[in-house]
Length: 80
Image 1 (cartoon, rainbow, N blue to C red):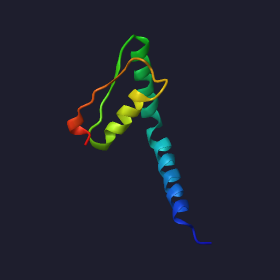
Image 2 (tube, rainbow, N blue to C red; image 1 turned 30 degrees about the vertical axis):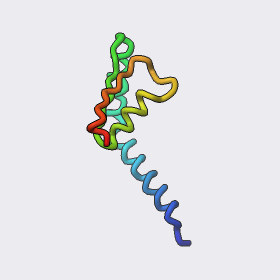
Image 3 (cartoon, helix red, strand yellow; image 1 turned 90 degrees about the vertical axis):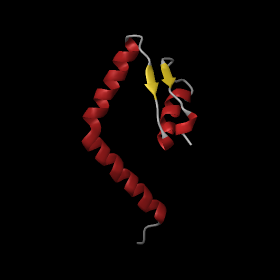
């Protein structure tokens, strides 16, 4: 059976996500704990991204139902 392009694409995504699960789980948990502690202590989570990474920062900030203490540090000159 010949695989179609979209099947190869999704298999690649699955492999990548599995690698992230294996190698980054502890780091993700630590980061989540830091963010949670900050919010519980009335802190603010600042997001920033330059280039295409600004989309992740904006997604965290603009998403409906987001946590109130999120500040997007946005510089239009770095997100073009």
